[in-house]
Length: 335
Image (cartoon, rainbow, N blue to C red; front, side):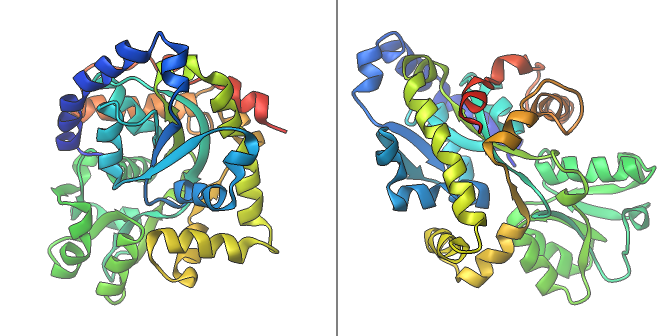
């Protein structure tokens, strides 16, 4: 979900991140003196943590955690500056912060996008094949760009078969309404605004067509993980309780109410966003964290994201994917 401009800004925080790691990275007492600080932002799989926060489940698990709320890009910048110990991001963006110098280790998956990311066609555009020879607006280098490329490939088309128009994601409703392009890429809630703003517009491709294209993770500063692995194990252990509370018909309404309050929208609206997110239990996450190729594996998906990031100039050097993933905590907590 991150642009080249944000990737460059991350470099500004890397020196602070390195200094913080050096100062306390070798000191168990240094890390243990503070609560674990986790940055999270407005995506259903991450807002889900609010349930555990409000219910006091981290205290019950015996771990001192402080969740800090950010806009998405700002959360990555805070992690890169060493202001937080962990951050919730897409697997591809974990590579972006690492390539900029602030390495992290993905210790668990929260979800994968299951429809919330979309390519939206104007009236008359019924499929990806209809985009041949037409203009498509995406924010180049972000996940909707990757979604589009994957969809074009499946439809027997190449990127050169369309004309890309680079536009900010939050401007996509106006871009689509202008009539200058045949389709736009956006994620919820912006995608819904684009559909509403252009009568007859509809999704022609979503992340539900390629499960695993966009995995969402909790990724941790390696020094913090090394010094406080037992505490991070407790954090991971709370996740199944969160997923169960959200998915249980008896408690789902309360869970949605909590999540909606965090982002300031009506519960009925938030319930629709939740439908486009496939929350992963720890058992499901354990399977995804097995080594493999393609989108069914976090390793394979991350390699695809790495290739995309390099090809689009988000960063220059391919990343060592295995070093970014530690499945041991999820495996230990999975039931």
